Amino acid sequence: MSEKGKRSTPAFTDARSKKVVIVAHCVLNQNARIDTCATAPAVFPKVLEALVERQIGILQYPCPELGFLGMGRQGQDCASWDGSYQHESGEVYDQMTVPEGRKLLRGLAENLVYQIKEYGKYGFKVLGVLGILGSPTCGVGLKYYKGIDETDGAFIEELKKSFEEAGLDLPILGLNDLEPDENVARIQALDS
Image (cartoon, rainbow, N blue to C red; front, side, top):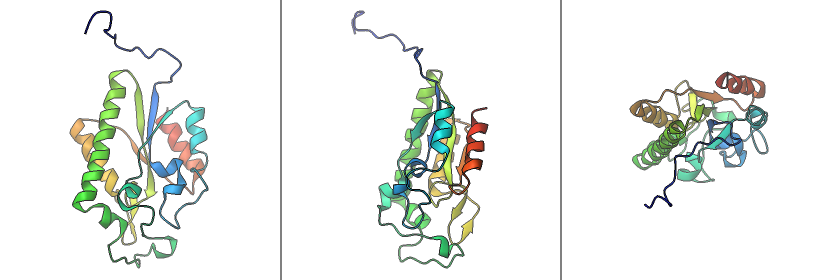
């Protein structure tokens, strides 16, 4: 490339905060949730406001379940958290962890690792990941699988593996759509 066309390394000294958080898709788009599980018309209450107030950029990852199983996917609802739910294809966690599902999840996780590293190269701070308590895919420390299971969802499993392989150490927190004030406290903790 000629000297005239050569680009210098960007300094990013404009108005940006250089703070980013990775957010599960349904936190900002309840329309993507499985039937019977949306608790708000659009977004998790207070989460968007808390992020904007703290000038934190939002990296919303695609909904793995919607991308792999579609809008009509079937899974547990409030009436079947006792483990009584049965589906001919297995629960959502089962469906997401077939080899093709794991491949999709791994690809999403690796893409996030790439983006995190890119932000880091230029002095941005990725504060962490906001997943969903209870999700069979994006659950953090709690998922609905044959009842209530105190382990991570399928995507969070892959994300943690990818972080470990890449040497990344970021907090991964679960939000609860029924606890807006606690969600704000979790965001405040990330940005302290």
